[in-house]
Amino acid sequence: MTLTAPQTDAFRARNPRDGQPSAPIPATPLAQLEDIVARARAAQKAWAARGVEGRIAVLARWRDVIEAMQDSLIAAVSQDTGRVLESRREAANIGKWIDRWSAIAPKALAPRGGQTSIPSFTCASEIAAIPVLGVISPWNFPMSLSLMDAIPALLAGCAVIIKPSEVTPHFIAPLERSIARIPELEGVLTYIRGAGDLGAALIEHVDGICFTGSTATGRKVAARAGARLIPCFVELGGKDPAIVLEGADLERAARAIVTGATLGTGQQCYSIERIYVARPLHDAFLALLTEKARKLKLAFPQPTDGQIGPLIFAPQAQIITAHLQDARDKGAIVHCGGEIERHGGGLWVAPTVLSQVTHAMDVMRDETFGPLMPVMAFDSEHEAVRLANESSYGLSAAVFGPQERAMAVARQLNAGGINVNDAGATPFFIGDPSVTPKEPFGASGLGGSRTGPDSILRFVRHKMIVTNVTNEPSAWWYDV
Image 1 (cartoon, rainbow, N blue to C red):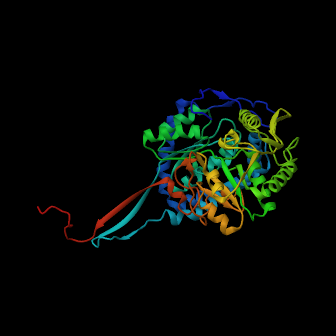
Image 2: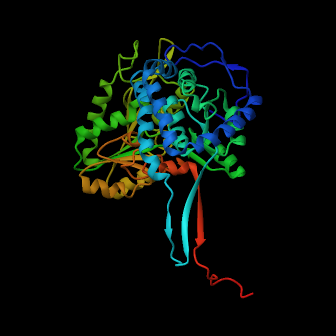
Image 3: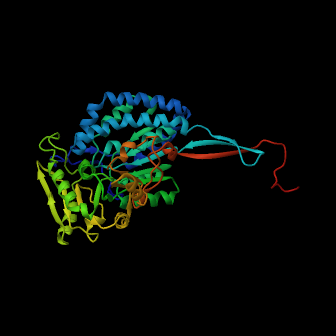
């Protein structure tokens, strides 16, 4: 998505499986956006006044509606993405996240205070929800990522307006039907449809903005939010490294990495996109990874026929092709996959393993967003850390090896979510109070954490109320 695509009365979405355009989908007119935000702002007052327990009760009823509508939600998001297994996970996430953040909210949002370091003063806290939060969400996991920030924001007392990617709009209609069955959510949770200019306009009207997507667009979102001085939370691209140390269980490492690199066809910001292996293990690991990659099949002709779905966004094929060609031109060897395939009108790419790669290649520097696994040898743990950190990105990472040494390496990596002896685990802890916060490094974003017990506090502003409880003058008063 860009922030400059022109507004139209209607748009079409491409079916990833057959390449055919959808029927025209009416876009939300830009002229209506101001009224939509005004309604949200008015509804938010009553929503905040319900208190946290009241909001939890409303969202629990919505969760029950969502669970009763799983089949229609899965069908819609499958139409958007061409996938079934991931679509089931997306639909299941909604209820899980409502439950997790509902468990967090009462304690996180409770008043705090007490005696201060100055004996004559006490302190009390008060929180104020961001009145209207805008969410601009991407196409790769369209339903989940539209709600990952919206759910905790609703529990915090915000009204939320969501502008999903125009690439994957079909899931919106069944979600809107579910929202309509909960009268208390009217005006409080709103979806709008359209291209990038609608998202750009949304930033101009809301009181805070969340964006998940490319680093290039995220910079524009952050710049505009900064100009308006509104809170901004952006989670952006990644070029996640995996490091395989001497002493690692190669079977475990290969299985975890091939999954972490190809889940969702590699169309996820936390995919493993570069792999560094201790030189004595390199050849054995490369052979094992290639063997496992070849076992993964395209999910064609039926969505359940394999693990690897189609490319959702057609232009992504051009980036993958360019990365592969650049790597070949500079001496990389392709062991499996390596081509964009056309089946049934869709665009597909089989899991691809490369060796003889260097950091002079685009495939080792720039986000690919496809199931490519470039493998590079290292000679020391110091070199492995240097290579892993030689990136503008810092979203996630993985380290495989004996636990103590792997932990020592993990602590040196410039990334927000680091897996030890696993890969791709971070998203499964979204909203989980049992884990610590994580934040992106570098060009992978900025803002608060989506994990940890205080993750909901991104969506409130804090007031400190200090009270002089004595009749005595304070020491800093003028003697007048």
